[in-house]
Structures are given as structure tokens and as C-alpha cells.
Image (cartoon, rainbow, N blue to C red; front, side, top):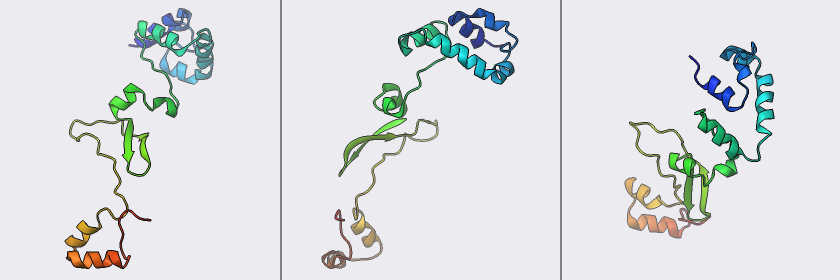
Length: 151
């Protein structure tokens, strides 16, 4: 049983669409989507803002949301709370936003921290694991074979 379609056509003030053969079921609406899109777009043109449209649809209990450009999603509370936008603090570039992972799974921990190591940041740790001594590591640094944080 379709619940949203009757609510939607009532909300847009066109209940006659319920009995229109082109839109009577989901397959018909899919086949005639260009005509249906035109009807919806014409209705939307009568409003000053997206908020007005959203308020009408929400009042009718029709699921809806604005379509945002990427720059509008950054800083949007919903996307930040879902992890779809993530703030990164880079030691060289400073603070900036990147797309995050909006999907959350019960058996998977919180999204991983996104901090890339700097050039050579782990040299000493890795070389010690490979058996190098402190003296050998310092010698490699002095000879400029390895470096840390320099390009």
C-alpha cells in the first residue's frame, strides 16, 4: 500500500494526480517521470524558498530534504554529526574539511582518525624495528639518506 504518494499529491494541492492513469502506480510514475517532474517543478516555482516547500511536505509527513551543493554540506550540522564531512587538522595546511564516511555499522568502531604522517615521521621507529641502532640512524640523517619533515 502506498502511503507517501497520496500524502504528496495532497500536499502539493493536486489530488487529481491520484486517479491520473499516468501516475496511478509506481511503474506509471517511473515511465512518466518527465511529465511528473514538470508538474512538481511547476509547483515548486510558486515558493520563495526551499524551506517553505520542506515545511509543507514535512507537515504532510512526506520524507524530504534539500539537495545541497558540496560547499553547502560543509559545516552543515547533520552531515557533521553523521561523519559525512570531517574536519582535518593538517600540520602544514592547517584546518580544512574533507568528505567523510557517512555509513555507520554497529560492529565497526567510530570512523578512523584521518591524520597522514609527515615525511619521515616514522623513520626512527621503523629503522629500530629493522635492527638499526640510534647511532646508525643519526648517521643516515647526517648523510641526508633519510630526513624528517623536510622536502
